[in-house]
Image (cartoon, rainbow, N blue to C red; front, side):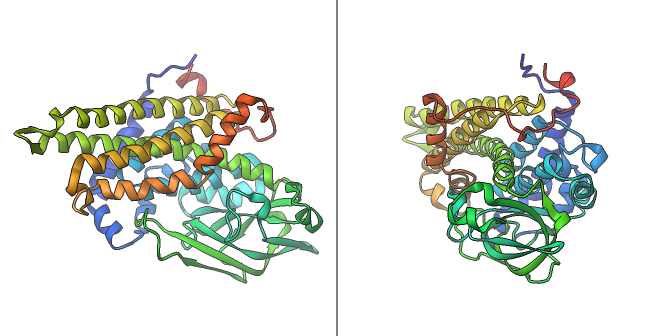
Length: 406
């Protein structure tokens, strides 16, 4: 049975992240967004709050909280700005939780521990200039030479791509399988920024999430030690799909926070602005938009809570996490559009936050599985074309789950 009552630990985390976000980031976020500035000083503050290792066990330098805590942090961060949640998504969701599950003990000590403490920043390298949803279209290769792999390729649209220290990178290790587009030829590696032949840059012409860093990186015959292979050769596709389960979870919870931000901004404006002699909140069509935001917020929150509960007890959750991500991101796009509409001409002004919400929401409908990919996935589950078979891709059950979610 799911207990929807938050624990004291959950309440304290929610309060701490909310207070920090409102006090330290919210007053500056409009200017950071306007100037397309990623403020690196945010990272040590997040580390001090334990967010960069929020659900990583204490033995590996993390805060040892549960996966519901990861969702709470994601929702609260995106309530302030999407760029904050993105940090949690790539650093914790896509990278650190993958190392926790698939990494060797040596890899955990060398990479996961400093990441969980916030001493090193990590991200995820799957998307390429010619491959997004089509993972089999990757072109990056890693050729085995002695005790090393020589990696060549380019990754694009990488959050924290020009900031991170560690990269979880996917490449073909079997060139025959690459020709056949057989994902069993893909493998995963930990790549360090300091490796010779590695270079990165920042993408300059985004129109959303402007306070975040999005970049690319290139690998020109980068030598990667064989001990940096994550899992076994040929398990890269499984690891990537596992990682996306965790990343999508943070995106779902984050988009829920964006819906709440749209709702709160719309309620405040509807009570302040007058038209035809009354507050615009008195007009039925404005009420309808605000009511839809509330409905979407409550539904999206329940969906990510259920996915988080499944993660806590160590059960497969690809279907539920995908549904949460799909629903919440599409609903956030609707909420942001309506929030701009509620604000009228002022919604088109940079003086109000809803324009930023509108620009930010679109990314999540595209990355980590487009709206269309998730539509097909959910239909395939219902039609029996896609199974729910258990695999090694399960998260380790949260050890304190019995005390928090019954």
